[in-house]
Length: 191
Ligand SMILES: NC(=O)c1ccc[n+]([C@@H]2O[C@H](COP(=O)([O-])OP(=O)(O)OC[C@H]3O[C@@H](n4cnc5c(N)ncnc54)[C@H](OP(=O)(O)O)[C@@H]3O)[C@@H](O)[C@H]2O)c1
Image 1 (tube, rainbow, N blue to C red):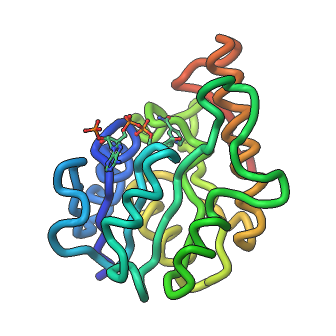
Image 2 (cartoon, rainbow, N blue to C red; image 1 turned 30 degrees about the vertical axis):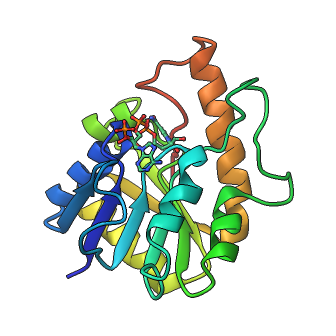
């Protein structure tokens, strides 16, 4: 069975860890102080601010080869809250994939607010975790794991779609910061 290591024990790390544990998976949550230490599972979730990703990748240098690395970040400019800090033709996930050529990078969880992942509900239905990546098998395993934990998940396409997911995440956060939607609301996917 797939084992998960979640780097970051904040709102998203604990929410994602809870879903995967509910799905019956082996999950290890890694605190800030433990980062870079201890064993890592088949799938590593980067549940840290975008600004911390570089130092986390440095801390695990060489140890992420062959692993699936899940980028959940919304790389928002925290000075202005008015743009993303990655180039418009790229994404945080694409940058991480370039930095980790021997890992399989997926983008996921960035369009679902933590409270909706904790309650497993948005607008009266299960939230849908959108997953983008170039490796169909890795994507399929993550989607199945999330569904097993009681939240819906959908294949959003290749890793190139991370750019659109990050734009969605940014817009959703702007709507919530502007008090137009609640932090327990946001975008839902209706099929
Ligand atoms: N919150 C949401 O609803 C939401 C939704 C979609 C995507 N996201 C994305 O999810 C990520 C995490 O957000 P969050 O809301 O969970 O943040 P959070 O509650 O602030 O948690 C962040 C976690 O990262 C750890 N951390 C910070 N810097 C680190 C470093 N250099 N090395 C190792 N660990 C470090 C923190 O540890 P310490 O507190 O001990 O420093 C904490 O455990 C962000 O990239 C955000 O854009 C969040």
